[in-house]
Image (tube, rainbow, N blue to C red; front, side, top):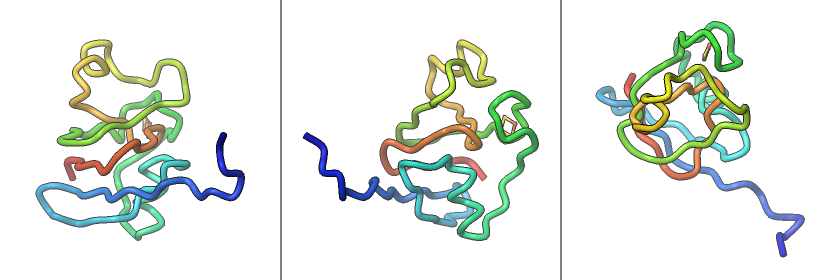
Length: 97
Ligand code: FES
C-alpha cells in the first residue's frame, strides 16, 4: 500500500565533466529539475521528438512516460543516452554536460 502523503523521491543528478549537481525529483523530467537549479541544458521541443537535448547517460536509471521517445532503438537498448526533457530519474544519475 502506498502512503498517500509520501513525497516522490529526490535523486542527485551530476553533470560530467563539469561536476555541477542538481536535485532531480522522480516526478518531473531531468530538464525541468536542471532548469529549477538554474542549469539551462540545450532543448527545443521538450516533448521527446527533436533530440536537441540528447546527451550521454554515464550512470543511473531513467524512465519515460511516453511510449517511444526520440531515441533510436539501439540508443534506448544501450541505456547510454538520455533525453532529459522526457526522462524521469529512477536513481542518482550522471549526465554528460
Ligand atoms: S528537447 Fe526535443 S527531444 Fe528533448
